[in-house]
Figure (tube, rainbow, N blue to C red):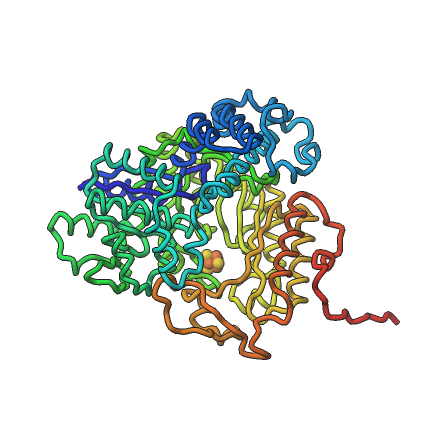
Length: 605
Ligand code: SF4
């Protein structure tokens, strides 16, 4: 049985998304054949090429815009080679601003001398080249396909979609120019691989439209079985009842795809009855039956990158901040150290779902063997551990194993800040190659951290961050605002904590999310424990992840202040901190439209 496993447009552009590499390796270790394709990077590569852009420029009527796009087409190939790390000799010309046509994105350029000094020519060039790529994407979105964005495609149709109506209508409309490019690439893979079945991973809302466009094309033109799975499916479709989705696919799998795909293969080969599929819904059995049956992590093979166009990935640097750049620069090999989270208790987190709740680890030697195999295959020694929270005990053992084998690697990943990150462990991590960690400081309030069962205090987090800083490991922190019962003063205090951490140099980057109550989290399953109640309980026919809620005390409004405006203030403040600016300003100054309660005056005797 041969599978074609596809990452649909669009996800990140600097490195492959890991699902197909893991599934391909697993299926092949069980006697099946599997090819893989990343249609996202292929699509971007197809658009950002001299031939396509110059043809596109010919169709533009307005003279200046035509000349701009013509110029873009003339230099796009060398700029791409630079962003792929294949030709760094171009850096000086890009950095001295004599090469790139400068579109609207360049108008917001900060003081580059401040950001890069005179020695960071390559970093500066990478930032400018990224603006050039983004300008073209903006133009295409504004003039040709409103769905197109560099790392997401038609995301607005999949975000918070209670019904399938709007997305279904868009998918039934004639294909756009960009859709057709995508389908052409898909056709090439189908011709080359001649698979028996095609699987799509849908990790984010920004690749749902692309997946379904491709899926329907395969069903209509090639009559092959189509399978959908991935993170978006796992969180949004567990209660999905709209059967129209089966016009686009035959099987929808939930949680880890290894076992469901293996069973589907056996079923398609006539060796297994349909009712023996696992965590899979079909037109004949459209309601999910949960199952915890899985392949133990220790038995999984190393991810297999064969067939992915590794030379095509682009390192983009939207921001000058070195920690922030890790997400979009560098072709980091994505690898999972352990499955699930060892803590799995935080109130806002999807702890009832397999990807968080089922903690399953391989041993350290297996993790490092996987790293060695991947390095041999990709000729790249950088790893991004995609764990929800790296377990400190296994992390320590892996670091020791890396050092014992005298490997030279770099790695980073997500952690849960806690006491276990002592100075000794942080030094060991740095010795083994750890360059950065990210973790949730969440609401940065001890009361709320207790309420959400984060199991850590601000002081413990700050201490861990100091140890990372002293070891030379960069820190990114995730922050949250708008948790049930959170007061305006608590949010303000949280920003003050963050300001101090930036000022002390113990975090390098941060991002604020607005709290979202999901139906898979403790706060969504028992909202009353957190001072909230769900305002809708009937599942939507299509997507069901985030739920509406209101407080159980006070009025029906979630907050007695403008939460959006507060969110903007938090983001602007943090953006400035990440650029080393505004650290001396009082935190209140980032919220000019917000009226704060009067502070109590303290009288000294
Ligand atoms: S938020 Fe992080 S630490 Fe908490 S349960 Fe989720 S993955 Fe684990």
